[in-house]
Length: 473
Image (cartoon, rainbow, N blue to C red; front, side, top):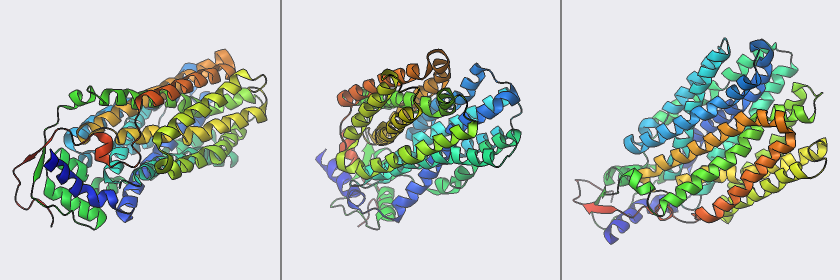
């Protein structure tokens, strides 16, 4: 085991100690454009369904389904791609998920009724789920030790741009008088462009060195990829070859400490997405309830203002501090302030009806969602599980999150109709409190550790006879 540890340490030392360079940023850009598209596609539907209600004669139930079905489909996408990444490799799967997303976005723009749009949004969601499962893992496995949280967080922060692009583009169409029966098609179809721009880059990316070493036992290819990424060849005193002797993925994820970690990553992501997607996808409906006589353009611009002033900075504050104060602190702190903001809207007299008060508290909640669990729930699963099951664990965690997002997006219109804004915010405050408790109990702090230290990677590896030309010199 000591020889194994020395082999792994020496192979990955150049990556762990490297400064952030061009190859890192290429990986971040390639992954991040997918997240820009994911956010745009998932959140633009809230505005689209408002436009489509008189055109397709949508009921409240149909609006809920269209707003949420992509999120439910993303559960299947995350589980599928997460599992396949561990079985077939990261490279073989990367790029397929955004190709599916592109096809779904284009087809959605040509939908002719509720049923066709419903089916095409399932396709979009499947691709989005696959993107969640693949991008974080690939970025994590290429990252250095010092900046891993910042790099993975930057990928996810691209969601903030997509979050703003949706209402911005919708506002342009609404303000310029584009007919509603064309505007909604343009809104959905435009989501294909940024994702399509990185399909080629994703298909050309190299297999991650962590996968080639730990799962394939291929030291030579691992050393080549490390050198390609950092410009420095690993220096090994011996010529060992590593072969994985890890138990099956199911066994690893149900053993200590990984089962508790999985409950923590999946459970926290589930709770966070109930609040984030429930409020965000239904923001046009929430703002209409707050301001019944306002126009759709007014409400879209208000949403854009909240995202730009509160949410967008929150993403980047989290990126800046991820490797300084740690994931765990950012996550429980974010959940706590969310609970306080939502609770104030629900319990303070007049907070749910006074427009400035509501918008101020709503904006605070958005800042701490982003400078909080929306960022960290994406980062955590890509760090604290072994390589052989990292994709599966990340896929399960993302799937749990998107199932929570589905529940939030589906039920908020009904909650809003039955219990008003105070009822919705009371539910969001409750799930946020649960998020604080789960974070404190179930999750470790991986800040400052190598990926192998954070994930317990060294357990179960064995040294075997070396193949020819196994390592760099």
